[in-house]
Length: 309
Image 1 (cartoon, one colour):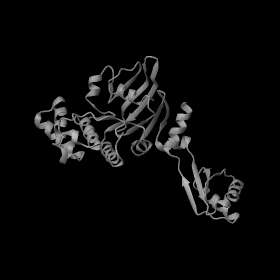
Image 2 (cartoon, rainbow, N blue to C red):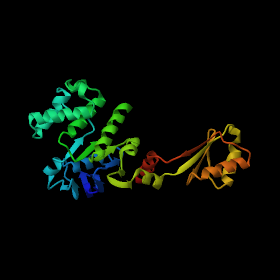
Image 3 (cartoon, rainbow, N blue to C red):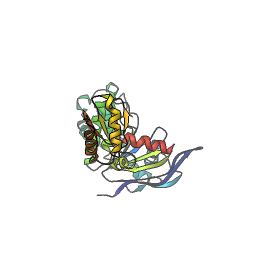
Image 4 (cartoon, rainbow, N blue to C red):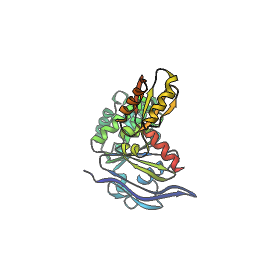
């Protein structure tokens, strides 16, 4: 199904003289991940707070799971899960008791609550620590428990606000795998992050915010194509050959830039690797290494941030 589970149109929100959101519009189809990128203060968390009914917008409209976030806030809350930037678990309770408590608050019977808790502890690999106080959990375990807590009510939409901040690489990878499983099962996710590799790995589409405005949107590949460019890096065995190689590549219509013992030239396609090899061969030079570099989301983000500034 391709129906929209999150839709915002011209959303604005101000705090005094500061415009946190200025005409933001997004659309997220069912069973996909929208990656929301932006620096601190770009408006990511404010948008999440509007979409999860914690803040009313000053203007514009927003719907989640088909319900208006202002007029039908109760229906929205019953269909979403939220994991904030910091784990919000009761450290005095065990992992099991945290999940049972939330299930009971959502109206489940004791039997139903314990069954749902056991299911989530299994999903998040927390069975062995289920009866330990959550204050004894590692950072990664607390984040997994926090995400499990947001899933107790079987939400259709999950908001993850910088969920892997402060986690080590292994814990981040584990959380990514959980998110991927949820999306495979049809859950819709809005993910805010400052980690470009996280967005590249998880997001079906990406929206970049800067100063409360949308400055770019598209898939990772589309954004890279907009502002990035492929390049060929040539490594030579002898640095003294760099000027000769540079002249040869310039005659071939390329624009190489020297650095240390390499030359890097922007190209439009991988076919231009052959142009580089022929140009070097004509002057009797051979590269010890040729590397075709793709643009990264880092390139995209830095370029967009510079334009926004």
